[in-house]
Length: 425
Ligand SMILES: *[C@@H]1O[C@H](CO)[C@@H](O)[C@H](O)[C@H]1NC(C)=O
Ligand SMILES: *[C@@H]1O[C@H](CO)[C@@H](O)[C@H](O)[C@H]1NC(C)=O
Ligand SMILES: *[C@@H]1O[C@H](CO)[C@@H](O)[C@H](O)[C@H]1NC(C)=O
Ligand SMILES: *[C@@H]1O[C@H](CO)[C@@H](O)[C@H](O)[C@H]1NC(C)=O
Ligand SMILES: *[C@@H]1O[C@H](CO)[C@@H](O)[C@H](O)[C@H]1NC(C)=O
Ligand SMILES: *[C@@H]1O[C@H](CO)[C@@H](O)[C@H](O)[C@H]1NC(C)=O
Ligand SMILES: *[C@@H]1O[C@H](CO)[C@@H](O)[C@H](O)[C@H]1NC(C)=O
Ligand SMILES: *[C@@H]1O[C@H](CO)[C@@H](O)[C@H](O)[C@H]1NC(C)=O
Ligand SMILES: *[C@@H]1O[C@H](CO)[C@@H](O)[C@H](O)[C@H]1NC(C)=O
Ligand SMILES: *[C@@H]1O[C@H](CO)[C@@H](O)[C@H](O)[C@H]1NC(C)=O
Ligand SMILES: *[C@@H]1O[C@H](CO)[C@@H](O)[C@H](O)[C@H]1NC(C)=O
Image 1 (cartoon, rainbow, N blue to C red):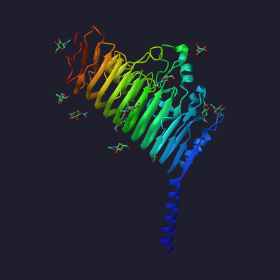
Image 2 (image 1 turned 120 degrees about the vertical axis):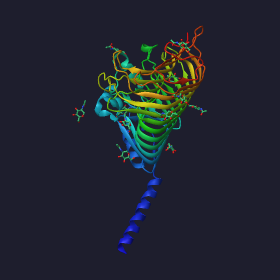
Image 3 (image 1 turned 180 degrees about the horizontal axis):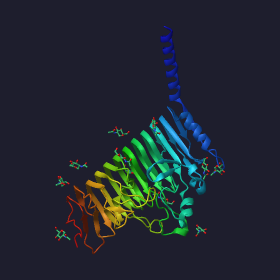
Image 4 (image 1 turned 135 degrees about the horizontal axis):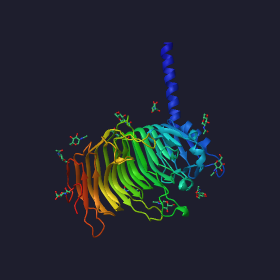
């Protein structure tokens, strides 16, 4: 009797606690110029990030140290910007960022983790990365992977997370990363890495400002993205499966990438079931951003280990299969469809054993600055079966014939002309 009463009582208390928690709402507004908002942001998320609702009013929130939001069954309305202080030396101290993204030991200053949450930034908020300070700082310094430049927005160990109408201004480095996560939807993402320092007119001073890198993640949707960058607009890295990207605009940069893969000799990279649908690549004023390199491209390291990650590597195995690219428009690009397996390598290296198969390309329009419309250079150690093209009508430069190159491709069909080692004249 007493035991039963105890159980009933504790159930009542537990349910009451849950009920109160689910009604919990935290409201924030920026403290104003010269003040530090980091404490109030962390306090609000600690109180309302689990079974609660956090509402940020519009404005700039001054964030002065690394931050993790652990969200469970929670909603965040981020009407304003988390403004990460522009202090390069501070953030480059490895103690001041997280290293939750394994690949290339990349740093993060802001990590979201947890499950069943929605972050809605209403197209009025998100992150201000103050990237200009970084780009100018690195204008005459060398950069390398893993050197501590922080990813602006990292989702790590997330299950069923939604990010909506989110804006990332001036990312110093990769704009987004999703790692070790599943069932994630990004609907509405804006990133803009545009140099305005007159010292660097006409140069790509915003390298590595990828729109997103996906890694060790399953079932991720990237919908309605607008990315201005100096590097990969989207980069699908190792162990990314069931990835859907739809309605993607890329302004400048290197295009849509699958890779690089095969950097880690002890970690096979698998990329399976990826759809890119409705992708526009727009060339910018070359004074602002000279690059618009590839349309969609695939890259692996060679079969030889050349140094160690984060900067070196190679020799990794794995496969890429069932990648569909459809409805692409080029404005124009240099290399519309490209695959190579020699990243970071030398001509004497062993060929990569990482195999590409079942790649389809359909409904490609626009133009190319080079006449090589298709350039697939598969590894002799892993020739590519089942490469299917449909409605590829990308115009070569005027007066030049288009050429299609397929090296070590087992089985290909659907191009308007033959695809072989030297292509059509
Ligand atoms: C951010 O907070 C710091 C104090 O931690 C302050 O020195 C700095 O001026 C603030 N920045 C802005 C833009 O308000
Ligand atoms: C990082 O933190 C460790 C442990 O507190 C400390 O020993 C080290 O000096 C710090 N490194 C830097 C560069 O500040
Ligand atoms: C990932 O999140 C789950 C709950 O969402 C937690 O149980 C687990 O410990 C987390 N793993 C890591 C490596 O953080
Ligand atoms: C790097 O460029 C800055 C201007 O952005 C200049 O002040 C500095 O002297 C340059 N440093 C070197 C080593 O060239
Ligand atoms: C993929 O994730 C979405 C969003 O969380 C979810 O609705 C859907 O059921 C997931 N698909 C699978 C096959 O699990
Ligand atoms: C990106 O930022 C630059 C510099 O502020 C601006 O000129 C450009 O219009 C922005 N691009 C988009 C698509 O908003
Ligand atoms: C495509 O995405 C852009 C944002 O990048 C959005 O403004 C536009 O409405 C989207 N188009 C469709 C058809 O959803
Ligand atoms: C990818 O998944 C496979 C199979 O689960 C695993 O063996 C491999 O180590 C993973 N690779 C990476 C880069 O995590
Ligand atoms: C490639 O597609 C064929 C035909 O649909 C299928 O049988 C095969 O399993 C696929 N290969 C991979 C690696 O998924
Ligand atoms: C060649 O590719 C087509 C479609 O891409 C596929 O149906 C066929 O089975 C492949 N044949 C061989 C021998 O791999
Ligand atoms: C490419 O293919 C076409 C048609 O099959 C053929 O006429 C041409 O000789 C081939 N070129 C090479 C270098 O194999």
